[in-house]
Structure formats: structure tokens, C-alpha cells
Image (cartoon, rainbow, N blue to C red):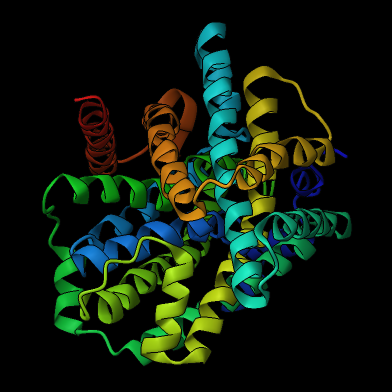
Length: 421
């Protein structure tokens, strides 16, 4: 099975043409462009986010909320690259870089997908275990079957996949909206955590890197450029600019939703656990504390959110892996075969008895190392007039993007030194 989601978007729809020509008004004009960012956004709430955000909130309160705000700009650059060039990030990298570099980027991209799958399957298995007390190994097998079922949505067209993923996204939204309401966080502390960047010791840097890896997902950077590259093809520079304006609204809505979910995870942990002097690193312990401090409904909502996030994000990881391989080395394997291959390592780790939450947190640190390999080429390409035409980054956009990239690299260098010293 080839990547039908991408192929189904190869021609401009009648609705998109009418929107670009101004023949429809209001929200209906935006509708043909909605969807890609919601597919990418599901990667921002995979189970690794649960582990890092709960740990960060319970240990440091609202301190690290600011890390979550970095996603919007990065996803807009990725979408813009696909619109301007009709190609995705790995394809542009293959054309611009020497072949050995492309092969190296493909290998690290596949390692990122393995880390992603580890987080997704462990999270979904944990959700099943917490809700139904199904042993983790059996739960991981059920999660694998569920991930194949979600891939089947592609057979019904890209709108069916987008609708299914978006529906699952809003299940998680509802779960954490209720939890946030029950937790009654301190709004002044929330504002301080969001808008005042700071650390408190080396452990906070490690958790910040984990949050960064979980929130600014490298495979989502690759994916978003592919989701927009042939969805609506601009025939002129004017049309491309208009398409990007519509797609940016899609990104804004989806990233606000995903960012709010991530923020609410950390906020709930701070309001319930940090406030009561509880440092919670294990998600099963978090589940028990939710039941004790906020009631059984809150615990059930946490388990449901974890399960749905794991299942939905697994399909996004598979799509991303297909795009990475096709783009960097021009080779493709059937999605079902890829899904089968990528479920083996996480199931093996679960079977070995490794602590699931520890594995989740470490998978997010691995993902944080992959961000630079996706982000730096993305900034380079979107800053070149030769590649982007009239959609080339403004200087201030490039400047902020390089600041984010420098922060990512600095955090990773710190982690290397801290790990070995």
C-alpha cells in the first residue's frame, strides 16, 4: 500500500479553486485548506508528552511551560516549504545536499521514528493497562492491531483520515479541559511559567529537553511539508501566498489546540502534584494520584487521553517514516510492512520489563536530538529565494528560527556533557 493520503491530494479540488478565486466567503473559503495541521498536531500530543509534562509539572510546578510555545513557528515554516516548492523537506534535502548527507539524514530519521513508535505503543499499552488492567504485553499487541485499523482510514480518502485523527485529538482536548477545570490552577503562576523562560538546576534542563523533543517533534517537521506539498497547488506566486495564508490559519488553530493540551498536562500536574509535594515520574502512579486527589473520573479521563493519544499518533509516525524514506533515498515500502517492522522494537522493550515511563522519557530525549537535523535544513531552505520564491522567510522570521535552533543545539550539548561527565 502506497501513501494514499499524500497521493489523494495531487490535484486542486473544485472547492479550493473557488476559494482562491474568491467565489466563496467566510469560513467556507477556509474549509478546503483545513486538515494537514491537525494530522501534524497529533504528533504533538503523543504519550511521551504525558510523561515529560507530568514529570516537569510535578517537580517544578509551572516553571517550564514556556518550552511548549516554540511549535507554531516551526510548523508554519514546514507547511510553507511544501506550498512554495511542491516538494517535502526530505526531497529538497536530497536535491540540495550530497548523497552521503542525505543517507545520514535518512538513518537518523528512521531512528527518530523508532523513538516515536516506542512512545506511542508504550503510551497506548499503558492506557489499556490503567483502564482495564490488561497486562502490558497483551495491551501492546492490542494497540498494534488498533494502529493498523487507523491506517485503514486512508482507503476512504484523505478527508476520512483527517476527520478520524481530528476526532481523536478532540477526545484528548475534552479529557484535559475537564481535568484542568477540576485542578483549579493558579492563573498568575501559569502566566509566569508561559512567558518567563528560566531553569532551576540541571534536572530542569533535562526535562526541558524532553518537553522540547515531545512538543517540537522532528517527524512532524518532515510530515507537514508533505501534507501541504500537493494538497492545493498554487499556479502563481499570488496563489501560493494566498494558500499559505489559509494554511497558516489551519496551523494556528491546530497548534493552539495541541499547545493547550500540552500546557494543560503540565498545569494539572503542577496544580495537583507539585502543590501537594508529590514528584510523579511514573504514569501509573499519576493515574492513582489523579483518582485520589481529583476523583475517579479524572483518573479515567487521564487513561482515556493516554490511550487515544497513543493510537492516533501511531498512524502519524508511520506516515512520517514513509515520507522520510521516499524523500531522502527515493525508496518506499508498503505502509503495512513499515507498521509491522516498527512495532517490533517497542513490543520487545515492553516484554523485557523496562519501566514504561522511564522508556517514554528517554524516547523524548532521543527525539530532541533529532530536532536539529530537521530544523536546521528547514530554516536554510525556507530562507533561500531560489527555493521559496515570494514565500521566502522574512528576516525577523529567520532570526527567531535560528534562536530556537541554537537553543535546541545548546540543550542537546548540555545533555551530552551532563550524561558523560
